[in-house]
Image 1 (cartoon, one colour):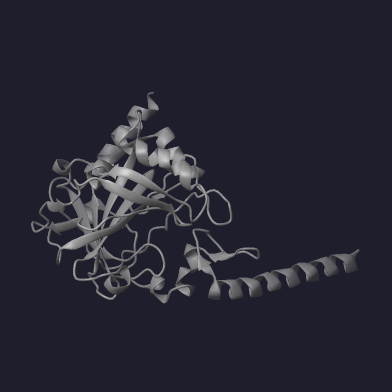
Image 2 (cartoon, one colour):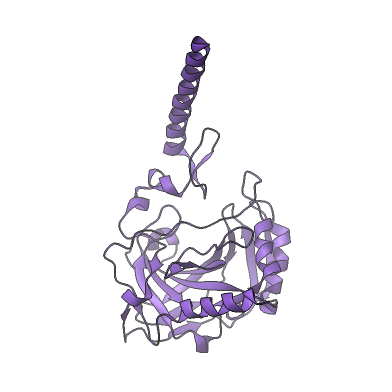
Length: 311
């Protein structure tokens, strides 16, 4: 009996060592993904080992972060942004890129003001979400995580590609918008949500007609309050070249609209869920806010949760 136990233990140890060797090999050359860890049968590297995919992912100015509102600094220079071309409707290319939903944006969409270093042109937007109603935003406010987060990615007008912009410490400007679950559907999002049925599989795409960015964000009159900090892309190569602007005003979506995103699939034909990077250390970076009460978002979350609990 003791011999059998020793034999089993030896075999288990051998398998663990084989697993470890395979994992190391996989991590060094694998594609990144949103898995929490690497296992024997994994084909990609999760967020905890992204620095093996790109060394920059282990930097000191990474994103996303948790914003502690009482530790933010008011900056009078953070005036309202100017949204040029956000009102123009056009046909937009929508795709499942294997990691998220992405909308490639037409030329002519530019943001300025708000103490940005230059004018920035929009190139794409994408979203991050959770699973079965669990929170899925990348950034958090006072530890609170939202159901979903949208990023509109811009690069300086002088650059022709994202690969050029990542070489500049302020080459990219990302506007972040949080979503909040609502009791009624957001009709402005209906075309986008309906089109998700066409891009269930990775690399599939569809055309979304007559879409403007103005339809997808809160009214501009409500976008005066926002947070600002310097960070990185939230996916490899995690380049620390992003000026982040995170708005307090949230976007409402119903449960059924949020759940439509959970039907999409990763390349392994598994559910496309929990598509967010965990928060990263802020280290010594300051976070600024534009005006008003920086704790507003946390207050809104509290009120919404109380209202939903009574329904």
